[in-house]
Image (cartoon, rainbow, N blue to C red; front, side):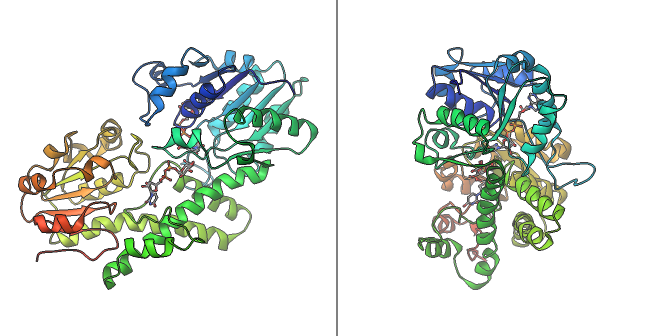
Length: 458
Ligand code: NAD
Ligand code: UGA
């Protein structure tokens, strides 16, 4: 197969933007175009004010933009010119009709497939970059080969494993790249052409190849396993709080077993982000559709535990603060679903803010990068919520502080100054278990963490 020169990505979001910027950096001899229907997003990619915050991303875009990385809204033209098309459109949970609240909404993906079909006058490789239900490639192949006009499409799966906040490092040095293809002559040739792109900077032994279905399912399975570890450690936190065991010590002890390993054992207010919940629910739906009810129930429980952990956090706050937070000022430090991102999709902070608003608390939200998203997410909650980028101003006169995101700056904050500016008794709820609780207690705070006995002066 001839070398791929023109690479296109449809979807300029959290995945499409960073992955294509990295390919452009590592393959200066190939032309990379990223298109999107969202003109505002495309304009932002071409400006100094990128549409997403991601450490190191600006540098990569600055180096490649208009050299061999191009952003455009002209999807038709870009399809016509491309040799390979990565599809990185959103695949959210369906909110209507059959499978609502569980199945993946494939409307954006299908629209894209039809557009590729319409605009292609020569053979193309189409690569699923979005996370999709297993066997989606078969449906894509059907859309693409309907009314055959001699153009051949080879559909591959190349799911993305980057995590937000560390996307650039993950792309630069991934644990593995996964490429699934048909195991036919043309499928294997297309697979080799895509392997060749990644082999520009990734050792070949980290580029795994499989059949298409294994690749599609592996992506969802990887997210399900990661989320399951978080729910498993979180499922121990209540027992720890009631018995005097400390979940951070338990995590260290079990994580030292090389068969278990230390990562993704950090207890907290629950996982957020656009994908864990969506992908597990998608897995649940696939199992249900095949009549595999026990398997579906097993995976559903990972999400149930996560919802419980978020609700429980607010219950702890209420109980600690004498069963009422009405009219009390509560500062939420952090709104992003994790540190080093502006992304607030499925953030536990949103659930916590909504529940506190229902209790008539006066909420102040602070975050270094996610305040704009927070304002959009909480638009319906109204004037119970205020926004303040300076954490010291946010906590002034507050009855309680709840740390929702493990931004490093909250670890470094002058907590003595915070304590002095708050109303007493001053409560702190560490939803990420990353503050120095002994020090805070000594300063006078009543300290509540996750999976650790509360430290109260009462
Ligand atoms: P996103 O919402 O940030 O970006 C998707 C983009 O696709 C949007 O800008 C949207 O306007 C565009 N789009 C939708 N339909 C289009 C069309 N017909 N033509 C052109 N553009 C179109 O989503 P994301 O977070 O980048 O996720 C994309 C996919 O990647 C999802 O399937 C997700 O599960 C998966 N994924 C995401 C991450 C992550 O960290 N966010 C990581 C791995 C995998
Ligand atoms: C996750 C996966 O880690 C990526 O491999 C995957 O590509 C991506 O989903 C996706 O498919 O979208 P991401 O959601 O960006 O990445 O971030 P994570 O680092 O996985 O964190 C997810 C959530 O779990 C965050 O809210 C984080 O605070 C929480 N978390 C993580 C914990 O509560 N405890 C932990 O030990 C680890």
